[in-house]
Length: 288
View 1: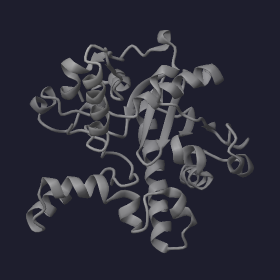
View 2: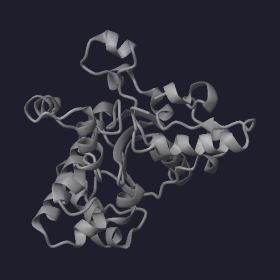
View 3: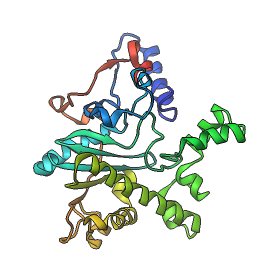
């Protein structure tokens, strides 16, 4: 459970509870990381000794079930865009972005763990690893203290000192709340550009998940930070929460698509080639 301590313990608890009631019942794990298996080597590697990558230290990516659902939704809504260069922003209490081309993952902001990328509700996103060395050496923080800091005390909560809930921060009149939201929106925009670079361009931007679907203010701020690449919103469409929210002048279409991370929602023949059906009893606890 070292890669996602906020998520895996709860999921494993349910599996073990069901096993205790019905030991013979097959259970299947649908890993968020499977969708990202199509990424090229350069998107998976860190600048560390290659032997560490051979040992499993690589960029796995997460929120794959959400991205796969959005890919299938796009195939129904706009097939020509589904095959194009798409950046999907899954923005919620946990947040990441993914570059998708022909519906396949090319790059993503989360890496070895769910800490990487943009700031989240209680997680910091990408930080200088030298900070962790400093906190260990100069502040005497051990692994447990660092884990608590990185998973539960940082991000929007830590920056604002108020809440990890974007709705509360948007309604707050406190300067720290506004600064936390501003930083979040800037970092999301920076990641959009970085992911577009991985694909050599950007043909569509999609907002999804709790914040992406429901916060017109966040969508507007992110797109303002992307105005230099030709992203323009229709303010009224954005405020209404329409599906298409770009203006006529926008070079890049912008959509809002609700996600669904329940794997049973997708037909079996739509299963992604990178998906793996893994029996819990044999391998779940050692698979990232």
